[in-house]
Image 1 (cartoon, rainbow, N blue to C red):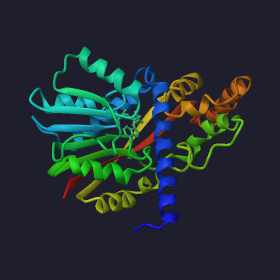
Image 2: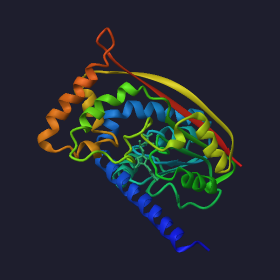
Image 3: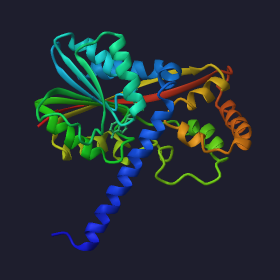
Length: 294
Ligand SMILES: C[S@@+](CC[C@H](N)C(=O)[O-])C[C@H]1O[C@@H](n2cnc3c(N)ncnc32)[C@H](O)[C@@H]1O
């Protein structure tokens, strides 16, 4: 029997988790309309790579956790074909509704999108051959709870595949930090923009990822890293892209009368990152992890 203090600690943790998830939903609701339009090229390329690594087969049933605007969902639907089935789940109602409308627009009858929490996907046990999670596991507050949920809905021998960020060039956090220095209150230590990878420490290294998956009942864990280089067209294009990601929720908190100064500071920091030829090249390392349900 847990003691009163343990119960209180557990309740406090659950409250903090619920608050974090409400914050995630609010943050992604804000960018549901611009996410795909502004940064879609990057997310769609990542989604296609994740689906390729997952090794989906025709007829597979697939659950896409944190489906956002469908960067993983749509290539997954193509990979499983009309005899397969794809379900997308997202905490953000606006993301889920916009993606459900896009599914209907494409006439995909075997794809559904729901608002929901990946910790408790709400599908029967052993109902999917694959569970995918594109760039969401390090955002959610309890990734181990998501993995337990994924394990429950996977068939024995089913695959879990996710993408996460690898090492980040620390110089590239400078421009956003310069803008966020104009916030009235400093960011809490738990904010998604804090920390090397902007998220949960279980995703810091290939080894820590393997330990997490192993502890949650997965085997044959394999991670590969892939590098992409993106040329940032201009300071304004970079600024616009920041407002179309989960970071917008922080940028919106910069007081209106300080916003222009915040932007100037960010773009000055960005200029310092130009290569000798004046071009802004942003390198991103993406990790693709695939594991088998034990
Ligand atoms: C960075 S976006 C990635 C979206 C999409 N998978 C992609 O690759 O473009 C992360 C998404 O995960 C969702 N998300 C985060 N935690 C979640 C959870 N616990 N359950 C469901 N969705 C979650 C967010 O609302 C957001 O839409």
